[in-house]
Length: 167
Image (cartoon, rainbow, N blue to C red; front, side, top):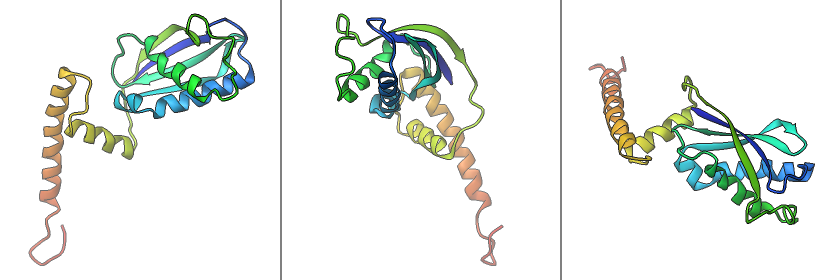
């Protein structure tokens, strides 16, 4: 898992009020739920602790490297705009931009555990070719064959004995 940490502010650098922070948190949840984020295995989250009155920390996680991580925050901007029913952002948009972001850090952490749902989802994506490029498709194909061998071994050991019971 690759973690991207950003310092995010409103485009006009005004203080982030509680309602705007709430909007950002809701937008992070919506951006994570969008089809593009699911297809690219990306998640967004707003940190509990602000950096200062005009900046908050936003984390974006991805299973694969992102060539232009700051541009990927446009999903967060789009979600903020679509959720802003109270016009909280009016007056904060500068040259068509809602937020400014600076990449603070990138850490690549090995995935050491996975939920059953994430495992099944990942295997289905591998089997049906949902990937980000040729290298990933080739890697998925190779590992699908390994998974196939494990499943065949499991099915072979699970066969019922001649007396009708299982091993």
